[in-house]
Length: 329
Image (cartoon, rainbow, N blue to C red; front, side):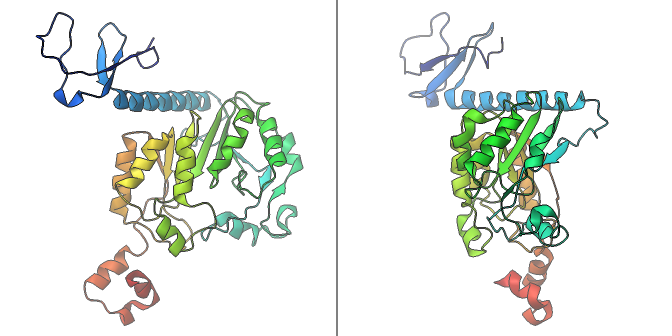
């Protein structure tokens, strides 16, 4: 049995003036007053309790990811090796968060506006026929990529019906993503065993979110708190589209959440969001890679990086035009 999963001994460190006896362990003076973990193995391991908990979360995440990838790669369905999500499934569509960058709303109101699901706009809708869809072992299903299943505007009855259908397929992984993760708690007893509960957290800066009118969804800090307090082993965070952030606080948020994986990427639709410089994003990716699996999505320079450099070099507002004014505001 691994020392990470066996029962540890938790002890508090005290100062001792006696000479070390046989079997006694000398510990750093800085550990006095703190709790440590003595892991029961052939060769005992002594670590601070906080570090032990961090390592345990890390092992749990890696174990889950390993099992998921093994299941995916053993499915023998011709799927590309690195395409983890095998299919999307939209039993509920539509959303009322009104995110400024929402590609799904744009699609529903343009190319799909004459389809049955979106004739009345991008409003929440239960699609009954989707509750007859079947899934296979090893499938990784992204649920409701054309909506937010756990938005406050979705009736609880709809959510329960969707989750009841997922429980019919115990060997399938279901990936949920919401901007309202506080609502997960209402349905934990109904979740399928292989559910991966995710939240989009684009930034840690509520002030930026409000000032730029990014979305009507719960503020990023609320989502972080909900995910941090969520008692579920397989959690997932999407930092996409990434917005400017505090380089010290934001990675701390993610570590406290303890996700099995994190997606990081820039906006794909030229929305001119308040983006961080590419170097700052890459440093975030490097830090997060030390604590969890990081999947890089679109990586590019922020749309205004070149403009800001030009402005700082003496280029005038008149020469820069509208984009220059945006960069200087």
